[in-house]
Image (tube, rainbow, N blue to C red; front, side, top):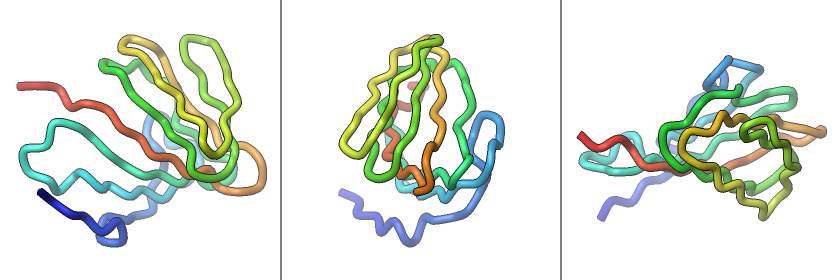
Length: 114
């Protein structure tokens, strides 16, 4: 078992896949040796987005706070707290913060097996 305090993993950085705006990243699983999945919290600041990118695994975006829009292969859906977007292997996906409050997400996906 490994217990991680998110405060020890936080850093401000542009979001991945296009560096659109700024975000606060909590790289919760990065320091766990032997892990098989990625588990992160990301706060997209107003105007920020994780740009469209093709995924090579299933992936979940779970909204804790704020509002946003997720895209998957051209289909757009609104997200709000309590929404989970389950995205499928091979899709081109992205997510955009909307409104005045930051969009706080949990993002989880498996890592490639060696």
